Image (cartoon, rainbow over the protein chains, first blue to last red):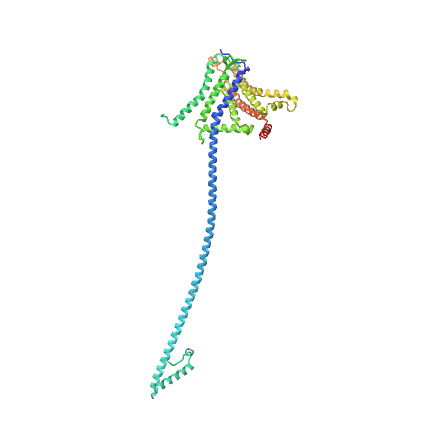
Length: 180
Length: 297
């Protein structure tokens, strides 16, 4: 049968061995647990930092782009506004010009029409006068037995017409007899 | 080789796990082989396998020594197994556990000792692991190394050496002067308290684990007697079976072996940190370094 120690028995060498045991375990843990894990953690931290740096860079450049583009958008909007305003004013101008033109043309047409109507009126008046002259000549030929020579005839008629003019309506006011 | 990487990884894993389990199994085998059958319930120290003649005092190689060596081998393989396949991107459970351990001990050391002592975190981890696993060995039925005072005295002496080393950081004169503070009359008290530190540390831990196992043995034997008294009338071999030993010893074992063992490991680690950090005169050391720098410049 094996001997046993007393419940409390102090042995110097056992204490030293136990002390060394703890030291050995410390070295084991340090080299085989903490070192590889710390290395992995450090590496991961490095990668993480790198990634964060990259993300930050990307964010900054994106922000720069955004500012750039928003500036450009603003100028573009202002430009568009300007263009719209310019085209509007131009359209208005053209509108006005067209209106003026149309008015002018209408006035012209009216004037022309008036002139034409005037001309027609004059023509009609002359026709009527001619008819009257012819008719009076015919009447005179038939009524007056004596033959008047041509010149006496004409003078007579002219005098009659003048008479007519003086007593006639306004429509014949401007009429000056004579050459025909 | 015909094996692909995955198979190789598995094979190494299995070998490492064998390295973890075999030493513990060996401890159990030794226990079974060397325990005499007819031994009743008795309170005694560690079994002595053989004695090596040494100067000053002979060295008996005992159960507690062998068990703690086997435990260290087992922890060594456990470390290799846990860190096997460690990579930058943690995607295995074992790496998560390892990182948790490292970060927890780092946090403990940072909280209790400060940034100057960050190198202590593997040491604190070693104290925690050795103490806790030694106490938990009793769950396997083998002799827990922590119930031998020599084992814990060794750790406490190491802590004492560390304390003294850090007290000496400002030179031996400063160290000797610290014994006469606050007044010279306190010299004997200070010396006693200095020696009391490792003694109290080792006795606290050893006493808790040892008393736990003694109480467990006493209660087991008491239950055996009670069982014989109460159920002895049962016919044949039924009367021989100590039925009352079922239940209560298991509950007590949860307290004495698991809870108390863990608690003592934690207390020992905490005290180590406190004493070592407290021994370091940080302000004086900083002043001394500053003086040295000035002298060199």
